[in-house]
Structures are given as C-alpha cells and as structure tokens.
Image (cartoon, rainbow, N blue to C red):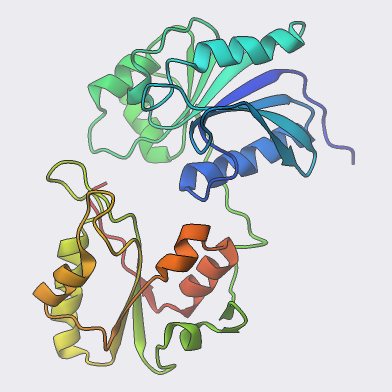
Length: 292
C-alpha cells in the first residue's frame, strides 16, 4: 500500500537533526518520516548549528537547516527563519513545531500556527508552560498520559503522541566496538552491573539527575553485594556545572576497581546509538532515579 502524501510546511524548532542529544535524535526520526510523507521540512536549530545556513540530507531528501540565534533557545530567530522557509512554499499550509520545553518560548513573538510537542515532567503544571500553551495559535501535543492529564486539569485540550524509538537500533545487542560488551567495559560476566545514563550537569544548586544520591546509594548497596559493578555513561568532569566524578566517587567510597566511566575520547566524537544499546543489554539494572 502506498504511503499517504501530505501537503504542508513544518519548521521544527529544536536541537539539530545530526546532534546526539535526546532532542536531536527525536528530530531525526520525526523529520525523516515527515519528508517521506511529502511535507516540506526545515530544522530551526537551538543547538547544533551556528553561523551559517546549511542543508541536511535525509534518506528521503534534503531539508533546510537554519542556525541558532543570539538568545539561548533561539526564539529570536524562529519567526524570521520560518517566514524565510515558508515563503518558498507560499501556497502550502505552514506551522512551526516546537520539540522542546515551551517555557523557554514565552518571549516568542509569533502569531502563526504552532504545534507544541511538549514534555511535562513536573508534579504540577508550571505557570510558564501553561501560559504558552494557552496561546490561541498554539496546539499542544503531549508526550505522555501524565502530561495530557495535567493539561486536562486546567482545561487545555491536547493530542497525545509519545516519543518514538528506532527498534532497528534499540534492541538486544551483545557487543560494542567489535567485542563483547562486558569485555569492552572490563566487567566480569558473572558480576551484577548497574548502569547510569545521565547528563552530569547542574542548574544552580540542583543536580537534576541526583548523581550524588545515586552514587551514595550504590555505595551502600555494594556493602552487601560485593559483586556489584557500576557503569557511568556521563561526562566525568564538571565542565557543564555538574560534579567532578572522581572526587565524588572517592568521597562516597567507590574506587576504580569496580566503577567504569565512559571513554571521554569516544564521547567527544559521539557514541553510536548501537553502542548504547549494547551497554543497556549488558546491564542488569538501569539506575535512573532523578528529580524530574
């Protein structure tokens, strides 16, 4: 059966298509499918491209790639970039699709159609999020039933569309970089492997991923389970305002003997998603308790 052909222009305001961030990976999956379905697509970058216009080659055709603006989340350039791109396809309906936290867009001066694919990960609905989603030109799309319930509670209608996962990549995978994953990590096959995949960065005094609490919890756990190992898939330095991991590990009594941290040289180039799937496969449990 032939795939349906859609007509329209969509400017995706988010991280760049080729970045290895969570948003970047979602943009890639979304943009590929939109282009395959016939839509005209642009990527309005707030991280991943700076200083010049570019073009992204998808498996189904090119998309326009616009650079970030002067403001941290590029809301200063979204209107002009979208107008520039949509103007090339003036006979088609057009919309900006925000794939990002929407509280950053409260200063956005734009009265065109906005599709807001919005994460809602708080216990209560943040006022700045509610304010943006109540704009008359905004159509909210929630990523979770929790988020949809939060919007329903304040009378905001939304469409629920969860994030996607590439099942050709995120599947049981036994080796990383050509060797068995535990061999690559230097972790015994009979050990109990706990893994954390998190960003080691903080906002003021709050470390959202609760790294210190999790490391202390693992240290206490290991007192009763000496066969336990820990893999930390995160930047070990405090370059992003987080913790100096070697110092913190020493403070909670964890040594290099049974703690593994990602290879920073590989990380600078970007771990392939297939390697991350292998790390997940090799783990006995994913430790992901955080502050939301």
